[in-house]
Image: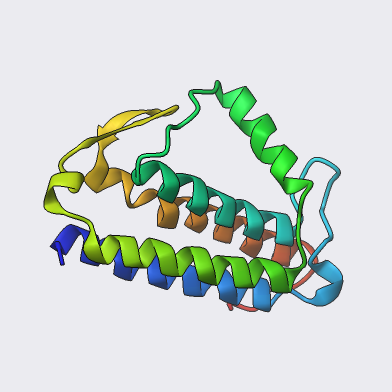
Amino acid sequence: MNPIAENTKNDFLRTKDRLLTMINTTPEDRLYWSPSPTARTPVQLFVHSINALQFLHESFMGKPVPMLSTADFDAYNRALDDETPTKEEAVARLEVLADAFVAWLEQVSDETLETMWESPFGTLPMSIAITFPARHAEGHISQLEYVQTIYGDRVWH
């Protein structure tokens, strides 16, 4: 296995475990709660991370990326938020998508990692792009931690 892919895999698995910890330590009565009408709920934050994983992984495998403006991309993602499944369905979906991404990382070729990835956010080496699923989820993990403090949970999970 390519060392870049192996490091990415290990980092992704740590991030996935942290994401699961955050959603599993959110009380049932707070899963669909939001601190404001425009803020995502904990389940929506979790699902948004899963949707990003799917979007990114599919694009890494060659599915064309829609070149949307950031405003259009946000509107697209917000529409997906409205399709929020139950926590259990979301966790099961994460497991399936994470397994597929990890399997892809385990077999990704050196040649693929040397290609350039075209995205709405610019063009960059695939060896960097493959780190985005974990980086993106980490941002939402921080949001989940903050939401927990809003309703009084100050325990470091």
